[in-house]
Image 1 (cartoon, protein in one colour):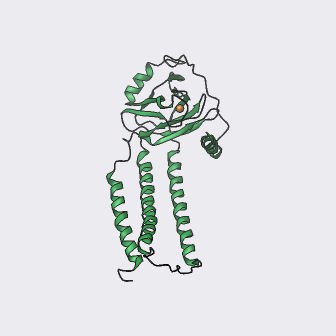
Image 2 (image 1 turned 45 degrees about the vertical axis):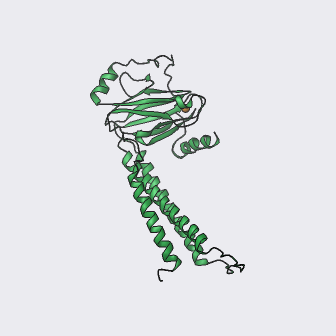
Image 3 (image 1 turned 45 degrees about the horizontal axis):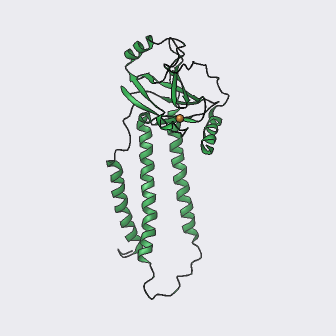
Length: 273
Ligand SMILES: [Cu+2]
């Protein structure tokens, strides 16, 4: 193949374009500050997906634009194109490569999800209750226990399990600094797990359009040092209501749904709503 061959020319263009875009993907600061231990793995997954997407985008656009330019009909050319009736080898290649690509990315995503959901010893249990248009947090296995707040307070370094539900419509509990979000669905409990790794205040956002006040449904996750968290805990009273709302702290019934069923239950109402 000499350098005039279309394949060589397309490959050259594609490599240059992919190099520029992948370089750019490292320069752009995509992710918010990390506040939990799981974020490295999630960010790497995103970056791998981004690079694979760049390669596919560049490949498709290079072939399409190159073909339009190189093989266009010249003025006065009224002849027909060559009669082509398929190419079995090409068809096998363009089925096999996407199959392998999608399967391996799904496996990689599955592994990251499994890591995110791993149970840790000594987890703090926090119920997250969404309600138009506020969040309530109920601290379970603590002393005094079963008190509520409408901002989230966590100790740095201790694993947390969130049991998430809603009192009215579907919300989504999302903490960008931890990369984790999960739907809050009336009648079922969904879960996420994380371990705070940075002191400070981080946004908690409702990421599911839930009504006229959706954009105001935000609060703060405060990550305190273990000693500061213990001091904060000592000031809380069992059975306390959310300040200013009078919302009592009802225990949430454990739902029978587990594992795979939970996922379907989360996905189905979302796609309909
Ligand atoms: Cu909401």
